[in-house]
Image (cartoon, rainbow over all chains, first blue to last red; front, top):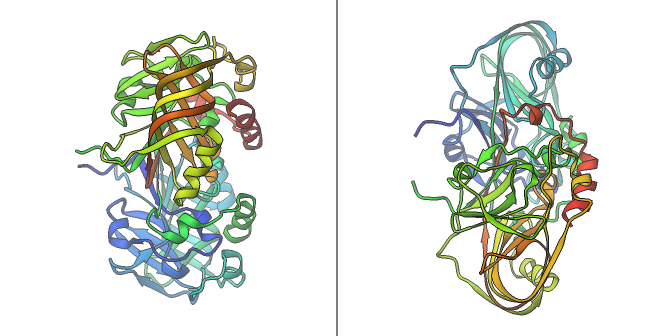
Length: 239
Length: 239
Protein backbone atom coordinates (compact mmCIF):
# COMPACT_ATOMS: atom_id res chain seq x y z
CA UNK A 1 0.00 0.00 0.00
CA UNK A 2 1.37 3.42 -0.90
CA UNK A 3 1.48 6.06 1.77
CA UNK A 4 -1.34 8.57 1.43
CA UNK A 5 0.20 12.04 1.06
CA UNK A 6 -3.28 13.64 1.07
CA UNK A 7 -3.94 12.59 4.66
CA UNK A 8 -2.86 14.03 8.00
CA UNK A 9 -3.07 11.70 11.00
CA UNK A 10 -3.50 12.80 14.59
CA UNK A 11 -3.34 10.67 17.72
CA UNK A 12 -5.08 12.27 20.70
CA UNK A 13 -6.44 15.79 20.85
CA UNK A 14 -5.01 19.03 22.08
CA UNK A 15 -8.03 19.21 24.39
CA UNK A 16 -6.94 16.13 26.34
CA UNK A 17 -3.74 17.87 27.40
CA UNK A 18 -5.73 20.67 29.08
CA UNK A 19 -6.82 18.66 32.17
CA UNK A 20 -3.37 17.00 32.28
CA UNK A 21 -3.81 13.70 30.40
CA UNK A 22 -0.08 13.51 29.64
CA UNK A 23 0.24 9.72 29.70
CA UNK A 24 1.58 8.30 26.44
CA UNK A 25 -1.08 6.24 24.67
CA UNK A 26 0.65 5.32 21.39
CA UNK A 27 4.18 4.10 20.74
CA UNK A 28 6.56 6.01 18.51
CA UNK A 29 6.84 2.84 16.38
CA UNK A 30 3.09 2.86 15.73
CA UNK A 31 3.00 6.61 15.18
CA UNK A 32 5.67 6.26 12.49
CA UNK A 33 3.42 3.85 10.55
CA UNK A 34 1.14 6.87 9.95
CA UNK A 35 3.74 9.37 8.72
CA UNK A 36 7.42 10.33 8.59
CA UNK A 37 7.15 14.02 9.50
CA UNK A 38 5.21 15.73 12.27
CA UNK A 39 5.01 17.32 15.70
CA UNK A 40 3.54 16.62 19.14
CA UNK A 41 4.70 15.94 22.65
CA UNK A 42 5.98 12.87 24.52
CA UNK A 43 4.82 10.89 27.58
CA UNK A 44 4.68 13.12 30.65
CA UNK A 45 4.86 16.25 28.47
CA UNK A 46 8.57 15.42 28.09
CA UNK A 47 9.41 18.05 25.52
CA UNK A 48 8.41 19.26 22.09
CA UNK A 49 8.23 16.43 19.58
CA UNK A 50 9.77 16.93 16.13
CA UNK A 51 9.45 14.10 13.58
CA UNK A 52 11.86 14.37 10.68
CA UNK A 53 12.24 11.70 8.00
CA UNK A 54 11.07 8.86 10.23
CA UNK A 55 13.00 9.91 13.34
CA UNK A 56 11.25 11.25 16.46
CA UNK A 57 13.17 13.83 18.45
CA UNK A 58 12.19 15.72 21.58
CA UNK A 59 13.46 19.08 22.74
CA UNK A 60 13.00 19.17 26.51
CA UNK A 61 12.73 22.03 28.99
CA UNK A 62 16.53 22.09 29.41
CA UNK A 63 16.87 22.57 25.66
CA UNK A 64 18.30 19.08 25.21
CA UNK A 65 17.49 17.10 22.07
CA UNK A 66 16.95 13.35 22.36
CA UNK A 67 15.84 10.78 19.82
CA UNK A 68 12.91 8.75 21.14
CA UNK A 69 13.12 4.96 21.03
CA UNK A 70 10.41 3.03 19.13
CA UNK A 71 8.83 1.99 22.45
CA UNK A 72 8.62 5.59 23.67
CA UNK A 73 5.04 6.84 23.82
CA UNK A 74 3.09 9.99 23.01
CA UNK A 75 -0.22 11.39 24.31
CA UNK A 76 -0.67 13.74 21.33
CA UNK A 77 1.01 13.91 17.94
CA UNK A 78 0.20 14.88 14.37
CA UNK A 79 2.02 13.26 11.44
CA UNK A 80 1.89 12.95 7.67
CA UNK A 81 3.77 11.39 4.78
CA UNK A 82 5.81 14.15 3.22
CA UNK A 83 5.10 14.33 -0.53
CA UNK A 84 8.53 14.38 -2.14
CA UNK A 85 7.04 15.38 -5.51
CA UNK A 86 5.83 18.75 -4.19
CA UNK A 87 7.39 21.91 -5.62
CA UNK A 88 9.45 23.93 -3.16
CA UNK A 89 9.23 27.69 -2.82
CA UNK A 90 12.27 29.82 -2.12
CA UNK A 91 11.78 32.08 0.90
CA UNK A 92 14.07 35.08 1.42
CA UNK A 93 14.18 37.57 4.28
CA UNK A 94 10.77 37.01 5.76
CA UNK A 95 9.46 37.23 9.29
CA UNK A 96 7.11 34.56 10.62
CA UNK A 97 4.15 36.94 10.48
CA UNK A 98 4.89 38.01 6.89
CA UNK A 99 5.33 34.45 5.66
CA UNK A 100 2.23 33.07 7.39
CA UNK A 101 0.05 35.80 5.93
CA UNK A 102 1.63 35.33 2.50
CA UNK A 103 0.92 31.57 2.50
CA UNK A 104 -2.81 32.09 3.03
CA UNK A 105 -2.90 34.92 0.48
CA UNK A 106 -1.37 32.86 -2.33
CA UNK A 107 -3.90 30.02 -2.35
CA UNK A 108 -7.28 29.29 -0.72
CA UNK A 109 -5.93 27.00 2.01
CA UNK A 110 -7.68 28.46 5.07
CA UNK A 111 -10.37 25.75 5.25
CA UNK A 112 -7.97 22.82 4.88
CA UNK A 113 -5.34 21.23 7.04
CA UNK A 114 -1.90 21.63 5.48
CA UNK A 115 1.70 20.90 6.45
CA UNK A 116 4.47 23.48 6.32
CA UNK A 117 8.06 22.26 6.00
CA UNK A 118 10.89 24.73 5.62
CA UNK A 119 14.61 23.97 5.55
CA UNK A 120 17.27 26.64 5.49
CA UNK A 121 18.96 29.42 7.41
CA UNK A 122 17.19 31.57 9.99
CA UNK A 123 18.57 34.90 11.17
CA UNK A 124 16.71 34.42 14.44
CA UNK A 125 14.89 31.38 15.81
CA UNK A 126 13.01 31.83 19.08
CA UNK A 127 11.58 28.68 20.68
CA UNK A 128 10.06 27.35 23.84
CA UNK A 129 9.86 23.88 25.37
CA UNK A 130 7.57 22.27 27.91
CA UNK A 131 9.06 20.72 31.00
CA UNK A 132 8.63 17.06 31.90
CA UNK A 133 5.84 16.56 34.44
CA UNK A 134 5.55 13.97 37.20
CA UNK A 135 2.41 12.09 38.21
CA UNK A 136 -0.06 13.06 39.49
CA UNK A 137 0.00 15.42 36.53
CA UNK A 138 -1.10 19.04 36.92
CA UNK A 139 -3.30 20.58 34.25
CA UNK A 140 -1.70 22.19 31.18
CA UNK A 141 -1.97 25.74 32.48
CA UNK A 142 -0.02 24.86 35.63
CA UNK A 143 2.42 22.64 33.69
CA UNK A 144 3.23 25.42 31.22
CA UNK A 145 3.32 28.33 33.69
CA UNK A 146 7.10 28.18 33.55
CA UNK A 147 8.33 27.43 30.04
CA UNK A 148 11.99 27.92 29.23
CA UNK A 149 12.63 29.90 26.06
CA UNK A 150 15.59 29.57 23.73
CA UNK A 151 16.98 31.71 20.95
CA UNK A 152 19.69 31.23 18.36
CA UNK A 153 20.87 33.43 15.53
CA UNK A 154 22.11 32.35 12.10
CA UNK A 155 20.87 28.82 12.63
CA UNK A 156 20.24 26.21 9.92
CA UNK A 157 17.60 23.57 10.36
CA UNK A 158 14.06 22.44 9.65
CA UNK A 159 10.72 23.95 10.59
CA UNK A 160 7.86 21.44 10.53
CA UNK A 161 4.23 21.76 11.51
CA UNK A 162 0.65 22.35 10.49
CA UNK A 163 -2.09 24.80 9.81
CA UNK A 164 -5.54 23.72 11.04
CA UNK A 165 -8.85 25.40 10.10
CA UNK A 166 -10.55 27.40 12.86
CA UNK A 167 -13.34 24.81 13.09
CA UNK A 168 -10.89 22.27 14.60
CA UNK A 169 -9.73 24.43 17.49
CA UNK A 170 -9.56 22.12 20.47
CA UNK A 171 -9.02 18.94 18.45
CA UNK A 172 -5.92 20.64 17.05
CA UNK A 173 -4.40 24.10 17.45
CA UNK A 174 -6.35 26.35 15.06
CA UNK A 175 -4.03 28.27 12.77
CA UNK A 176 -0.31 27.53 12.58
CA UNK A 177 1.49 25.26 15.03
CA UNK A 178 5.14 24.70 14.11
CA UNK A 179 8.24 23.18 15.72
CA UNK A 180 11.96 23.46 14.87
CA UNK A 181 15.08 21.32 14.99
CA UNK A 182 18.49 22.55 13.88
CA UNK A 183 20.78 20.52 11.63
CA UNK A 184 23.21 19.64 14.41
CA UNK A 185 20.36 18.37 16.61
CA UNK A 186 21.18 20.46 19.64
CA UNK A 187 18.59 23.25 19.42
CA UNK A 188 14.89 23.45 18.68
CA UNK A 189 11.40 23.46 20.21
CA UNK A 190 7.96 24.98 19.81
CA UNK A 191 8.42 28.04 17.59
CA UNK A 192 7.49 31.44 18.98
CA UNK A 193 9.06 33.56 16.26
CA UNK A 194 11.67 33.54 13.52
CA UNK A 195 13.15 35.48 10.64
CA UNK A 196 14.17 33.53 7.54
CA UNK A 197 17.38 34.40 5.73
CA UNK A 198 17.09 31.80 2.95
CA UNK A 199 14.99 28.68 2.96
CA UNK A 200 13.10 26.20 0.81
CA UNK A 201 9.46 25.74 1.80
CA UNK A 202 6.85 23.14 0.86
CA UNK A 203 3.14 23.40 1.58
CA UNK A 204 1.22 20.13 1.57
CA UNK A 205 -2.58 20.45 1.68
CA UNK A 206 -4.59 17.46 2.91
CA UNK A 207 -8.00 16.27 1.86
CA UNK A 208 -8.39 14.06 4.93
CA UNK A 209 -7.91 14.72 8.63
CA UNK A 210 -7.71 11.37 10.42
CA UNK A 211 -8.44 11.82 14.12
CA UNK A 212 -7.45 8.82 16.24
CA UNK A 213 -8.59 8.66 19.87
CA UNK A 214 -6.93 6.82 22.77
CA UNK A 215 -10.17 4.83 22.99
CA UNK A 216 -8.89 2.30 25.53
CA UNK A 217 -7.56 4.93 27.93
CA UNK A 218 -9.92 5.09 30.90
CA UNK A 219 -8.82 8.58 31.99
CA UNK A 220 -9.54 9.96 28.51
CA UNK A 221 -12.92 8.24 28.26
CA UNK A 222 -14.03 9.61 31.63
CA UNK A 223 -12.70 13.17 31.37
CA UNK A 224 -15.03 16.12 31.34
CA UNK A 225 -13.73 18.60 28.82
CA UNK A 226 -14.87 22.15 29.47
CA UNK A 227 -14.79 23.55 25.95
CA UNK A 228 -14.70 27.22 26.86
CA UNK A 229 -11.81 26.46 29.19
CA UNK A 230 -10.14 24.47 26.41
CA UNK A 231 -10.20 27.50 24.12
CA UNK A 232 -8.93 29.87 26.78
CA UNK A 233 -6.15 27.49 27.78
CA UNK A 234 -5.03 26.86 24.20
CA UNK A 235 -4.66 30.60 23.77
CA UNK A 236 -2.57 30.80 26.94
CA UNK A 237 -0.46 27.67 26.52
CA UNK A 238 0.09 27.42 22.76
CA UNK A 239 0.47 30.98 21.59
CA UNK B 1 -8.66 -5.23 2.67
CA UNK B 2 -11.20 -5.74 5.42
CA UNK B 3 -13.53 -2.90 6.23
CA UNK B 4 -12.50 -1.03 9.36
CA UNK B 5 -15.40 -1.18 11.83
CA UNK B 6 -13.49 1.08 14.27
CA UNK B 7 -13.62 4.04 11.89
CA UNK B 8 -16.35 6.57 11.06
CA UNK B 9 -15.94 8.46 7.80
CA UNK B 10 -17.37 11.89 7.07
CA UNK B 11 -17.42 13.74 3.76
CA UNK B 12 -17.86 17.50 4.17
CA UNK B 13 -18.69 19.29 7.39
CA UNK B 14 -21.91 20.42 8.95
CA UNK B 15 -20.40 23.92 8.96
CA UNK B 16 -20.29 24.08 5.16
CA UNK B 17 -24.07 23.74 5.00
CA UNK B 18 -24.52 26.90 7.10
CA UNK B 19 -23.65 29.42 4.32
CA UNK B 20 -25.51 27.26 1.76
CA UNK B 21 -22.83 25.05 0.18
CA UNK B 22 -25.42 22.45 -0.84
CA UNK B 23 -23.69 21.30 -4.05
CA UNK B 24 -22.93 17.58 -4.04
CA UNK B 25 -19.17 16.97 -3.96
CA UNK B 26 -18.98 13.16 -3.66
CA UNK B 27 -20.89 10.47 -5.51
CA UNK B 28 -23.01 7.94 -3.67
CA UNK B 29 -20.89 5.22 -5.29
CA UNK B 30 -17.74 6.65 -3.71
CA UNK B 31 -19.44 7.28 -0.37
CA UNK B 32 -20.46 3.61 -0.23
CA UNK B 33 -16.80 2.57 -0.48
CA UNK B 34 -16.39 4.08 3.01
CA UNK B 35 -19.32 2.43 4.76
CA UNK B 36 -22.66 0.67 4.38
CA UNK B 37 -24.69 2.55 7.01
CA UNK B 38 -24.97 6.26 7.68
CA UNK B 39 -26.77 9.58 7.36
CA UNK B 40 -26.39 12.93 5.60
CA UNK B 41 -28.11 14.98 2.95
CA UNK B 42 -28.15 14.98 -0.86
CA UNK B 43 -27.20 17.51 -3.56
CA UNK B 44 -29.27 20.68 -3.20
CA UNK B 45 -30.34 19.68 0.32
CA UNK B 46 -32.68 17.22 -1.39
CA UNK B 47 -33.87 15.42 1.69
CA UNK B 48 -32.60 13.51 4.67
CA UNK B 49 -30.12 10.79 3.67
CA UNK B 50 -30.47 7.33 5.24
CA UNK B 51 -27.89 4.68 4.30
CA UNK B 52 -28.98 1.13 5.14
CA UNK B 53 -26.98 -1.94 4.18
CA UNK B 54 -25.32 -0.31 1.17
CA UNK B 55 -28.42 1.48 -0.13
CA UNK B 56 -28.76 5.28 0.00
CA UNK B 57 -32.29 6.59 0.49
CA UNK B 58 -33.53 10.15 0.83
CA UNK B 59 -36.67 11.35 2.54
CA UNK B 60 -37.59 14.65 0.93
CA UNK B 61 -39.70 17.59 2.10
CA UNK B 62 -42.84 15.97 0.70
CA UNK B 63 -42.13 12.91 2.79
CA UNK B 64 -41.29 10.83 -0.27
CA UNK B 65 -38.59 8.18 -0.07
CA UNK B 66 -36.30 7.66 -3.07
CA UNK B 67 -33.24 5.47 -3.54
CA UNK B 68 -30.31 7.50 -4.85
CA UNK B 69 -28.47 6.28 -7.93
CA UNK B 70 -24.71 5.63 -7.66
CA UNK B 71 -24.00 8.84 -9.60
CA UNK B 72 -26.13 10.93 -7.22
CA UNK B 73 -24.02 13.25 -5.08
CA UNK B 74 -23.87 14.48 -1.48
CA UNK B 75 -22.42 17.64 0.10
CA UNK B 76 -22.31 16.11 3.60
CA UNK B 77 -22.60 12.55 4.83
CA UNK B 78 -21.30 10.34 7.63
CA UNK B 79 -20.91 6.60 7.14
CA UNK B 80 -19.39 3.53 8.79
CA UNK B 81 -19.11 -0.21 8.30
CA UNK B 82 -21.63 -1.78 10.63
CA UNK B 83 -19.93 -4.40 12.81
CA UNK B 84 -22.12 -7.46 12.50
CA UNK B 85 -20.37 -9.14 15.43
CA UNK B 86 -21.61 -6.53 17.92
CA UNK B 87 -24.01 -7.63 20.66
CA UNK B 88 -27.51 -6.16 20.40
CA UNK B 89 -29.41 -4.75 23.34
CA UNK B 90 -33.15 -5.19 23.71
CA UNK B 91 -34.93 -1.87 24.23
CA UNK B 92 -38.47 -1.81 25.65
CA UNK B 93 -40.82 1.11 26.23
CA UNK B 94 -38.32 3.94 26.17
CA UNK B 95 -38.57 7.53 25.07
CA UNK B 96 -35.76 9.11 23.04
CA UNK B 97 -34.63 11.19 26.01
CA UNK B 98 -34.60 8.20 28.38
CA UNK B 99 -32.68 6.01 25.96
CA UNK B 100 -30.07 8.62 25.04
CA UNK B 101 -29.33 9.34 28.69
CA UNK B 102 -29.19 5.62 29.47
CA UNK B 103 -26.67 4.95 26.65
CA UNK B 104 -24.18 7.45 28.05
CA UNK B 105 -24.75 6.23 31.62
CA UNK B 106 -23.95 2.60 30.82
CA UNK B 107 -20.46 3.13 29.37
CA UNK B 108 -17.94 5.99 29.10
CA UNK B 109 -18.70 6.88 25.48
CA UNK B 110 -19.11 10.65 25.74
CA UNK B 111 -15.65 11.46 24.36
CA UNK B 112 -15.87 9.11 21.37
CA UNK B 113 -17.82 9.05 18.16
CA UNK B 114 -20.23 6.11 18.12
CA UNK B 115 -22.99 4.82 15.84
CA UNK B 116 -26.47 3.97 17.07
CA UNK B 117 -28.56 1.50 15.06
CA UNK B 118 -31.95 0.40 16.29
CA UNK B 119 -34.45 -1.80 14.49
CA UNK B 120 -37.93 -2.48 15.78
CA UNK B 121 -41.34 -1.07 16.53
CA UNK B 122 -41.92 2.51 17.60
CA UNK B 123 -45.12 3.67 19.26
CA UNK B 124 -44.50 7.17 17.89
CA UNK B 125 -41.92 8.38 15.39
CA UNK B 126 -41.77 12.12 14.77
CA UNK B 127 -39.53 13.28 11.93
CA UNK B 128 -38.69 16.27 9.80
CA UNK B 129 -37.21 16.65 6.32
CA UNK B 130 -35.41 19.45 4.55
CA UNK B 131 -36.82 20.76 1.28
CA UNK B 132 -34.83 20.71 -1.95
CA UNK B 133 -33.23 24.07 -2.67
CA UNK B 134 -32.55 25.75 -6.01
CA UNK B 135 -29.44 27.71 -6.98
CA UNK B 136 -28.44 30.29 -6.00
CA UNK B 137 -28.73 28.51 -2.68
CA UNK B 138 -29.89 30.39 0.42
CA UNK B 139 -28.11 29.79 3.70
CA UNK B 140 -29.18 26.92 5.96
CA UNK B 141 -31.25 29.09 8.29
CA UNK B 142 -33.35 30.37 5.39
CA UNK B 143 -33.47 26.93 3.75
CA UNK B 144 -34.75 25.28 6.93
CA UNK B 145 -37.15 28.00 8.04
CA UNK B 146 -39.99 25.88 6.73
CA UNK B 147 -39.40 22.20 7.41
CA UNK B 148 -42.27 19.77 7.01
CA UNK B 149 -42.76 17.42 9.95
CA UNK B 150 -44.15 13.90 9.82
CA UNK B 151 -45.45 11.53 12.44
CA UNK B 152 -46.47 7.90 12.41
CA UNK B 153 -47.62 5.60 15.18
CA UNK B 154 -46.89 1.89 15.57
CA UNK B 155 -44.26 1.98 12.86
CA UNK B 156 -41.50 -0.58 12.30
CA UNK B 157 -38.20 0.42 10.81
CA UNK B 158 -34.58 1.38 11.44
CA UNK B 159 -33.04 4.28 13.31
CA UNK B 160 -29.47 5.05 12.27
CA UNK B 161 -27.10 7.81 13.24
CA UNK B 162 -24.27 9.03 15.40
CA UNK B 163 -23.16 10.58 18.62
CA UNK B 164 -20.29 13.07 18.29
CA UNK B 165 -18.25 14.49 21.20
CA UNK B 166 -18.90 18.16 22.03
CA UNK B 167 -15.40 19.08 20.75
CA UNK B 168 -16.50 18.34 17.17
CA UNK B 169 -19.52 20.65 17.11
CA UNK B 170 -19.42 22.35 13.71
CA UNK B 171 -17.51 19.57 11.97
CA UNK B 172 -20.37 17.27 13.00
CA UNK B 173 -23.50 17.75 15.10
CA UNK B 174 -22.35 17.46 18.71
CA UNK B 175 -24.42 14.92 20.62
CA UNK B 176 -26.90 12.63 18.89
CA UNK B 177 -27.95 13.04 15.25
CA UNK B 178 -30.23 10.24 14.04
CA UNK B 179 -32.41 9.51 11.00
CA UNK B 180 -35.18 6.96 10.41
CA UNK B 181 -36.57 4.85 7.59
CA UNK B 182 -39.52 2.52 8.00
CA UNK B 183 -39.52 -1.05 6.69
CA UNK B 184 -41.90 -0.30 3.83
CA UNK B 185 -39.71 2.61 2.67
CA UNK B 186 -42.44 5.22 2.61
CA UNK B 187 -41.80 7.14 5.83
CA UNK B 188 -38.73 8.53 7.56
CA UNK B 189 -36.50 11.58 7.98
CA UNK B 190 -34.46 13.46 10.57
CA UNK B 191 -35.68 12.26 13.96
CA UNK B 192 -37.19 14.80 16.33
CA UNK B 193 -38.64 12.36 18.84
CA UNK B 194 -39.77 8.79 19.30
CA UNK B 195 -41.00 6.24 21.77
CA UNK B 196 -39.77 2.67 21.38
CA UNK B 197 -42.13 -0.23 21.89
CA UNK B 198 -39.64 -3.04 21.23
CA UNK B 199 -36.35 -2.80 19.39
CA UNK B 200 -32.86 -4.23 19.09
CA UNK B 201 -30.10 -1.67 19.43
CA UNK B 202 -26.38 -1.78 18.67
CA UNK B 203 -23.83 0.81 19.77
CA UNK B 204 -20.60 0.90 17.76
CA UNK B 205 -17.82 3.07 19.24
CA UNK B 206 -15.09 4.30 16.89
CA UNK B 207 -11.43 4.91 17.59
CA UNK B 208 -10.99 6.98 14.42
CA UNK B 209 -12.93 9.90 12.99
CA UNK B 210 -11.92 10.33 9.34
CA UNK B 211 -12.82 13.82 8.15
CA UNK B 212 -12.72 14.19 4.37
CA UNK B 213 -12.95 17.67 2.82
CA UNK B 214 -14.27 18.67 -0.63
CA UNK B 215 -10.75 19.96 -1.27
CA UNK B 216 -11.26 20.66 -4.98
CA UNK B 217 -14.49 22.63 -4.47
CA UNK B 218 -13.70 26.31 -4.99
CA UNK B 219 -16.75 27.56 -3.06
CA UNK B 220 -15.76 25.50 -0.03
CA UNK B 221 -12.13 26.60 -0.16
CA UNK B 222 -13.07 30.28 -0.33
CA UNK B 223 -15.89 30.36 2.24
CA UNK B 224 -15.58 32.35 5.41
CA UNK B 225 -17.06 30.31 8.22
CA UNK B 226 -18.23 32.41 11.16
CA UNK B 227 -17.85 29.90 13.96
CA UNK B 228 -20.12 31.59 16.46
CA UNK B 229 -22.78 31.76 13.76
CA UNK B 230 -22.14 28.10 12.96
CA UNK B 231 -22.90 27.13 16.55
CA UNK B 232 -26.02 29.25 16.75
CA UNK B 233 -27.30 27.95 13.41
CA UNK B 234 -26.68 24.31 14.26
CA UNK B 235 -28.76 24.79 17.40
CA UNK B 236 -31.56 26.30 15.31
CA UNK B 237 -31.44 24.00 12.28
CA UNK B 238 -30.49 20.62 13.73
CA UNK B 239 -32.28 20.45 17.07
